[in-house]
Image (cartoon, rainbow, N blue to C red):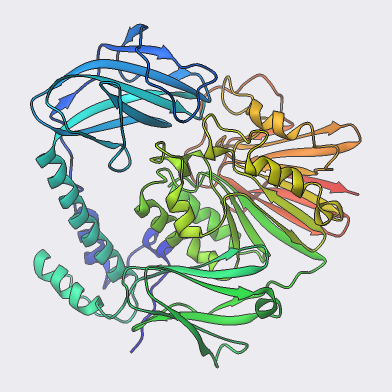
Amino acid sequence: MGATYLPCSSLYGEASADKLELKQFLESIPSPILKADESYDSSWVFVEGGLDEELNQDYKVIEGAAINLPHRINLPNQSLWYQKIVEVDAPGVLEISADDGAQLIVDGKRILRIHGNFFPFDFSGEHSVTIRVLNNAMFGGLNRVRYYTRDRYTKFIKDKEEVDEEKFLLQKALLIKNIDVNASLPAADLIQDLQQKLSSYPYIIGPYLIRRTDTVSIMAITDSNKSVELWKGSDSLNLTLKDSKQGGIVRFDLSQAETSDGLYYRLVSDRSLSAINYISTKETASYSFNVWADSQSGWKNFNQTLSVISQGSDAFGVGLGDLVSEGCDSLHWIQFFSHLAQVSGRMPFFLIPGNHDYDGYYDDLNAANHRAFTQSNPFQSWTFDNSAFIAIDPNATFPIGIKDGTNQYQWFQKEIESEKWKNATWRFVFLHQPPFSQGWEGYHGDQVIRDLLEPVLEKAKVDFVVCGHTHNYERWTRSYGEQRVTFLIVGGAGGSLEDGPMSAEPEMDTAIRQHHFGRFTISQNAVKFEAISHEGRAIDSYRQVK
């Protein structure tokens, strides 16, 4: 007998009577704590980095002011250097917490990270430790530095993996239909019982549809290497096997011809069945699409946003970065796609990275998880009916930007000169960082984005620039010659909202601190945009006609 897993969103509701005890057990499992052997919070020497510094920078001796941690300073898109003499008894591991990321240099030699914020410290005795913080946001700096012995760190990683596996197993048991669970068993026996019962039911996370220029990819994540089958057809009651892939991150590509007139599909792995989904990519003269940013691991709020999105019939959606809060952590991405699955099985998405999707990758700025889980280019273009879209990514360099002469810059210039762009009625540019913003005190948007876009907005006849990054909603319309451009920030999909003072300038037409997403509705020569709260209420609207 096959079984289907309930949507991850059901975890936020009341547990059924037969699953209540199981949910209570899941919530009672404590996460392991990594206790520091040493904390280095005082007597650091600090100096600002040069404005010409890039990702890889030669080591330098620091002569500056003495500071204590945490230390934060308003120097966006700039490196911050910290130095201290550290003495340890034995080799171990350093944990470096910094905004946005850090590089470690010991005795003048660059040390690459193990993973995330953890760096090997294969030394004993007294050593010069230099930490170079790469600040991509507003206020950034060095938060804390901790030292752990190798044994303590290794045990923590082992304990964390075991706890994560147990919690994942219990979550599967809560979500699966038609499988009896005896939650009254002793903990060890319950885990063993679940392992046996669920061994034939791989967890299918998704499916999620990723829209590409000429194809749509049906993707999913499974917790097993068992094969995943794609069944599809024009009739939901008569699906046939199309393809099979080994489990893990799986991808099935369908051409526009296959999906234009609509098709039903489901994924099957061993005895697990996904829901049957329907997809149609047929382009119509009147259509809508949603835009949102900064879900950023605020899963409960994001789930509410998606619930409202699911009530519409958008042709596609666009996630504008900071999809997760720790880009190098695969679990964050699994959680993201688990929630997105309530709509992504029938609605394709374009998922653009933001600065937090690069977190943990500040050795090389290769956002490996974004690439692995979406298998898409971080900058791309597409068309839909009478509209053209360009998505760009300024986060692949430090400081952020898209410099003249780079591949992305040349690609961008070529795209805005293309026939498909020129022939469109409506033209959209998507990216994470905004050129203009009022939502943070002292932040006015990113100058490097203004330098890229403002010289071409009139010539390229850009109608909308849509961004995230600032955790609120903002709208501003201004003219560039004869071209009217509307700048939108939709940074309230799930993460915490801004709560401090706003900047005095630029004075946006509208700025609202509320969780939300945006929806464009296009009808030939008219565009209607609405910002919609995650309760489903329109908090702002804008209309433009050509």
